[in-house]
Length: 212
Image (cartoon, helix red, strand yellow):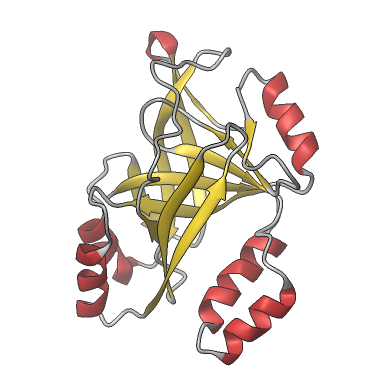
């Protein structure tokens, strides 16, 4: 697997989009009507997702808890209540399904919930993908790539940002071998902790900067 995207929690989506655009990034809303997220794509590698909320109603979370999906509801609660800043990490399979990843999780006795997902973006593309959420919050969530590639080709943001060069993800030491077995992407840097510590961007001419 490789790093798919990093979720950045924001308190006000419209203001966050305006701020990132002022900083020279190209940003598009996730959906045309009532968006709850926005995307900063890069041609190469992972993208950034600005998330105001999960869009999941509380009654749905209550139903999930009743039907054995309490840990997924907990993950959604964490994202919804998180302070501004990085709050989630997704890994993306190289294949069209998550069979290999499910096998690794099963071998490690890690339970999960697999959910088919969809999003119709602002350019009329009907994006379809599958997400897999481990019960264990020390493990990033997993996904297949979109059925349609939404990333722009040969694209550089107006401020010169070309790609995400690295992301430092904090987890418990005991889960590092499993995450390494799942993901061989050198962009991912693991450390002992419980949060995303830093996101490093690469700019034209090889310059690197931490995402503020």
